[in-house]
Image (cartoon, rainbow, N blue to C red; front, top):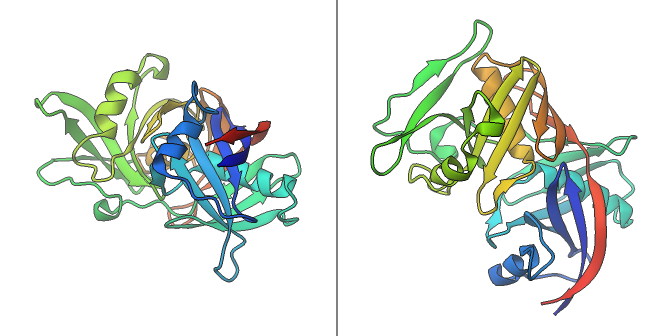
Length: 290
């Protein structure tokens, strides 16, 4: 199979984008891994598939495959690239686009300056919906005077050694957020995979390491499920900011410094959806034989 593709990136989180709106594209897990391979393929953190939606009122179907070949629920940086792509390819002229994922409905807005705002929907805190098994653990609840509060869960490895405390939530995909004093020195390479594959997370988890710079600014690194550490993670940025707000550490609008660029995350109040704004750029186009 000869496949046309577009390479894109959002804050350094990079993607191979495929157009399945005219001719359906079916990828096996092995083919997805080949596309994402940085030596034998194109190279990407995720593969994004653009498809037409059959749901009334929804413009497109948005599918995401990790570099491991697994189809996953959500990718915020990819969503920004998605709307830039469908505009550039003439698939829509609307600046506000609705897309469906495997478990969610997103609204994407292309701004005049080329930045994209994604309505990431409401965060999920119920353990069974994340999913997270906290049975037998004793969490520590923290929160400021004007914050609803959130539990910090102590994780240990199989030998009983402490990994640290994490806030657990979902932005359509599962996240564990750990606060660190210096994100540059955080042991992402060792703690990241240990948290990602922790048995208390049935579907594995994205592990975020957040340094609070000030109440409106954080630095973040994320070890993503099936991809390892990436230069940016949109859902990870949203999860970190939401956790920080609930824990009383952050204001409602926060600048997030990822290794690949900056994102802005806003959560106006606890019943609001989370808005994320950031860049989306084209890198190159080509064809590959699979």
